[in-house]
Length: 129
Image 1 (cartoon, one colour):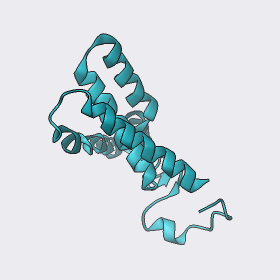
Image 2 (cartoon, rainbow, N blue to C red; image 1 turned 45 degrees about the vertical axis):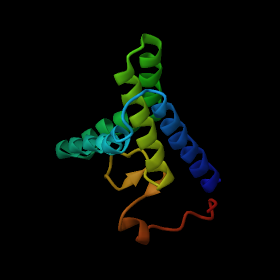
Image 3 (cartoon, rainbow, N blue to C red; image 1 turned 180 degrees about the vertical axis):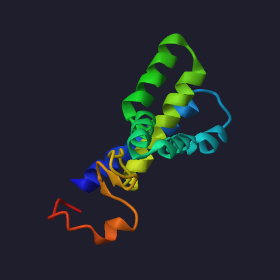
Image 4 (cartoon, rainbow, N blue to C red; image 1 turned 135 degrees about the horizontal axis):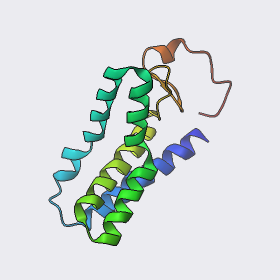
């Protein structure tokens, strides 16, 4: 199941690239902006709870899809671009195992523990590799 979900997320990344190609921006904008959503980690300066709220607001795929659709309906290409970057970034994060953050620590995500703590975490109990 885990690999199936990663494949689904990879599809969202590819879809984002395709839709980006239809916007008419120079190709280099996509890789340049792809990691901009990680600036939301600055919220962790206010503690793990505030950090998780800000990080999750930026990394929620529904936000990216909504921005894209609002931009498409209103013919505002910069909103479409922002939405596609958020969607691609969030989906790519999930392909690599980074999920939405839990409020206790940056390394706690809805997909499990990340970072050095992941190596000492108890087994997932065979939830499908």
